[in-house]
Amino acid sequence: MELVKVTIDGITVEVPSDFTVIEAAAKAGIRIPQLCYHPELEKVGACRVCIVEIEKARGLGAACVYPVADGMVVHTNTQKVRETRKTVIELLLANHPQDCLFCQKNNDCELQRTAAEIGVREVPYTGEKRKAVKDENNPSLVRDPNKCILCGRCIRACHERQGLDVYSFVNRGFKTIVEPAFGLGLDEVYCSYCGQCAAVCPTAAICERDDTEKVFAAIADPEKYTIVQTAPATRVALGEELGLPAGEIVTGKMVAALRRLGFDKVFDTDFSADLTIMEEGSEFIDRVLNGGVLPMITSCSPGWINFIEMKYPDLLPHLSTAKSPQGMFGALTKTYWPETQGIPVEKIFSVSIMPCTAKKSEIIRPQLQSNPGIPDVDVSLTTRELARMIKNAGIDFKSLPEEKYDSPLGTSTGAGVIFGATGGVMEAAIRTVYSILNDGKEIPGIAFKPVRGMEGIKEASVEVPIKGRNVTVKLAVAHTLRNAKILMDKVRAGEADYHFIEVMACPGGCIGGGGQPQPVTPEIRAARTAAIYRDDEANTLRQSHNNPDIIALYKNWLGKPLGEKSHHLPPHALPSAAEGAVTLRRKAKGEASERSLPIFMRGSKYKSVKSTAGFLANRSSCFYTAVSGL
Image (cartoon, rainbow, N blue to C red):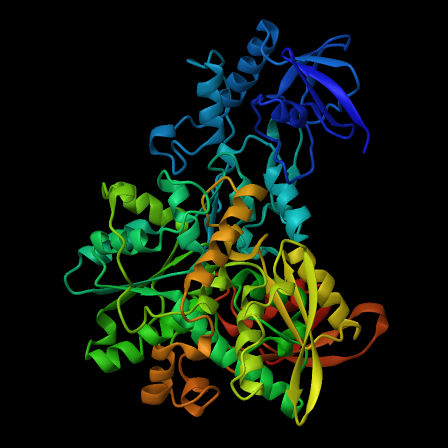
């Protein structure tokens, strides 16, 4: 790439010729205010907050979209630039609720921060304000169009990362808003609840549903026995919200903080990640040896599960029947734990701390009720929500001691922690599958690095002995739903010769989840991922089948992987626990074909088999319509 010289505020830098002014300024160590710009999304120049003066150019230019040129001279802090930026922010605030003191994103809002930096001290403009209705009819996300600044980040994230195109600009002029088509709610469209829109939103226009008060109330209730589990990716991100650098492993401090919040037991989702590997790995071996549906696809990511149910219902038999680690752990807290501890299940209040907004939708699925009418997980909180609870309680997180999880559901291996990164589920599974098929021999080096990294789709293979001969097992790993779509199209077309596929809905896997601290840049994502693998390497146990408490659980309670108890109680849900079936008839291109599909629930409005089936039938990209089973 050709290099050009650009002078910005007297500093000359050499940058690639395809850079924009805002990228060149960053290289010069100059931060230009911005709201619509995001380094990982298409540049659109919508907000005009980043305007700069460019010598020999007409007017002011938007730095995020203005291309550099050799010899260009840029001024970012002239009187004209400052006054114009201030006016832009004042106009945005004139159509904004201005309820900062009690807004969910107070002190974490880019509009608020930019207004302070630019020196806005009053809003001189008055007049009509946008009056839109909140969208809160789903379990995961809350949309408040009144706080939207029309930056378009959510539109671009949903399109570029997930390929779902849930959002678009609607209407014109002052009446322009961002919303799903036809004014529908997120529970009525193809939304996976992944939360990537919330992850890039600069204001509180899209946020995770805040459930912290439910948890505070349960902790304060003397009749409740509160249990909390923490997901792998939370331990490498929580610190960012509490004054620590990205990639800091804060496991011990997080455990200490949860105890100080008042939880009766603090357990680790890594334990059930190890349990997932025992069940999912055994299921994979069973499918390979006995002619089951291949490729088998992981079922850990609820955003991905929502996606495949809506977009590829014909491929549901490819999913592993194993619940997610959150689901498995929740089931244990409402079956194994009350049974062995003598605690009435009605008294147990189970909380999960997850990097994911879609986990909030997962816990309301009927498959996650081991006892009729009692959810296995009562509340799922994001990493951001836990940080707010810690701040609310006045806990000095940095000064906390390192504490350990409670036993026995707090013991885990390195295989469990790497679930937090893309490729981690696959690597953990291969570590155990390889050992089982090789009479206990470990895969060379333990780590299986071909499935690591940020490439959107990774392919790998491993040689394992199957029925007396070495067989090359072909693997694929995808993160983001746009990449998942590429693989699913190949599977549907019969062009995928893989045996096993891992899919995670969010960029980088759970470390880039929709409920993680903001912002999430490539550098922050890399720091979190590196911390995940450091944690794995520091663990004396790095294979799920070597977890002593997992071994004891099978010996004393579950029996064996894929056994009668494990299949019908905690670990399994898909597709055996489907809420029924519906026959779908294809309407497209004059073809006459039918198929029977299991029916699942993805959202709060779809509370019956009939309505869920109707949702799939009416909105399926496969052009199927329900004809029976309702």
